[in-house]
Amino acid sequence: MKTVKLIVYGTLMSGERNHRFCRNAVSINPCTITGTLYDTGYGFPAFVPEGENTVAAELIEIPFEDWEAVDRLEGYPRLYDRLMFPAKLADGMDTTGWVYVMHNLPERAQVIESGSWKEYRHG
Image 1: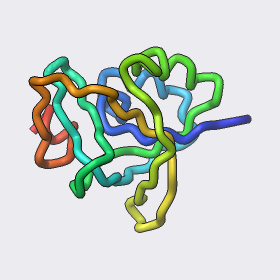
Image 2 (image 1 turned 135 degrees about the vertical axis):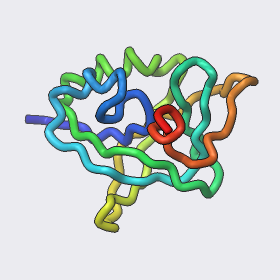
Image 3 (image 1 turned 45 degrees about the horizontal axis):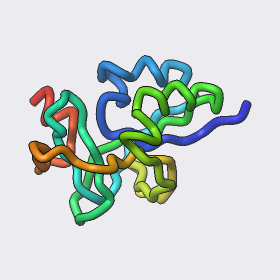
């Protein structure tokens, strides 16, 4: 089976409202990425690859045929672009995966200082 590795940092993470789009995941591994995480003010976050903050994420490997549905959810390529991006797994190993990056942050976007969408949303 052909798969694709996504780095997710918000509503696609396990336990979050859009994780159902990854229900056929082959694997899910905690990881971190470097950049800045924002609350867009619309109920979902945005990642920008600038900055030196540690952002909590998951490396999710999904069947290739599920990628199109995730692209639609993420508004790719209109709202988000996707980049192959480095990540560090919980065991310290380096890896890469596709991460969705917002084209233009809303004016009301606020930095999530903790770098964790789950912590920010759920305390």
